[in-house]
Image (cartoon, rainbow, N blue to C red; front, side, top):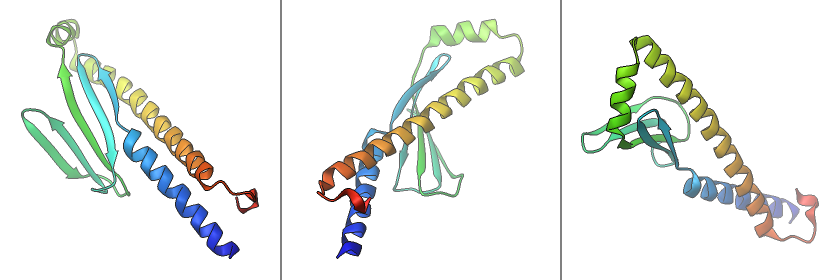
Length: 136
């Protein structure tokens, strides 16, 4: 009986983690004049999709893992883009600027996903409401 309780507890917590991360993972961010939304999905593991409406999407198998990554361009500030292009004297400078912002955004997104996974685990544990907590 204890074995069943432990299996049930583990499955409940994992389901809660997957639900919380699955529903709350999209995050909006900006890189200079461009606004994006990034999200993960469970339906296309290893696939990265970059969508630029209304032009279309680029989809490729880019990694080995249980999650797919979606990146969607949501808006472009044309005035800010014009100022940025006018102020940058070297293409290398622009690439370095974008890479620095993208690195920080990826770091924040990974921390956000870890936080959501933790909250999902806590929620799953609270759903169980056992009187005997030694199963954990």
